[in-house]
Length: 489
Image (cartoon, rainbow, N blue to C red; front, side, top):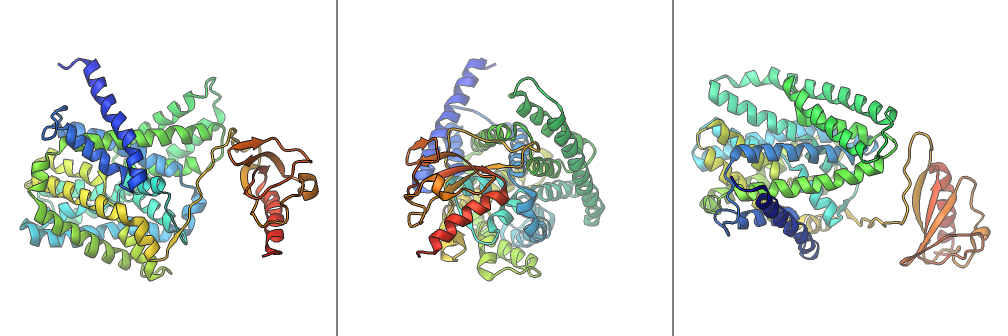
């Protein structure tokens, strides 16, 4: 039995270097998830041999737990107003798109690997989902923006398609073990998804009522309460034969779409939890894999990766988006951001635990395809977006010395308002600006300093005013600046 202090020491060192590696990813545009996997592989049996980790059950448990909180955090940061315009194509991609990808990839896997149709379809199902952890990580760490709701579509697809991938993977394993006909999956699909949707809504409603009505003495208890509700939602839904991943994603979306006290605390807390889960999950999967096994399947792995990136994913995207008004460049962009990550590797442990034929080959090929996807697609998302002319600059969020939390008790937001360098308000005082009623200028950010404004404060180009106001009142102040600016350009 290894003493707990040695386990904590090893875990701390691995997490410490994983966190520091994020600086490398920012400088050289390397996805941090790739470095997390690499650190795990280097510390594992065929690396430095510092950590001997070979439990597929533990890896699966760590992966499922991590995915629960990553998916929930993705939902928590998603507002209904953002996904409502892209709900149709998003649902099409996360259901039929995933199914088409699995079928096409399964067909080619049978030819490439010379396996049975069910084994090929199983590999296709495992590799079918775009990974929420990979997509959220790439977009937020690289600050990538897209035109016309593309980012919202891609994040929604990646957050909502894991339930379908889990269903297909578990269902096909059940067919192989029980020798059952494939049509038996159809009623099970509707039962699991329906139960996941309904239970997700019920738990979400209960959680919103709890957060708004209960008055806890300590602010730090609110994230703990939500953590318990996330775990409760997933476990109860699964016990009742629903899809737990779908339930926690709905819980996140509903909770994120409501205003309540301590919401900013929750957002900051679960952003940290999501990062920790990503690090732990990719480290565990990196420790589990044997590089010799993975790279012994280079040729079939490259072939399947090529089919996935250039045939299966694009075909499924174009088929699913036929009925939606979307340009060819945008569809190509959606096709390219089919990032594979931890979710397929976690799903690849299911066949290993079930004793499915060729499970070891499936796991090694899945790991190789994930590495290829993160390395090729993950590093080129911004480049392809610029080439297709679908990218937009993303503003870097400024961190101010104060925060304001919107609740139902006050209908106002603290918003940044930049003073353009060619605006007519430059040199004028706040008094001269005749600020419309309903706007309170709380602070002015000037360079690295902050000013407490008064009526005599003169405005300069590049100043950022922190304005507390309702949306309608804020729009009046913003329009003054824009109109004055437009008058001299």
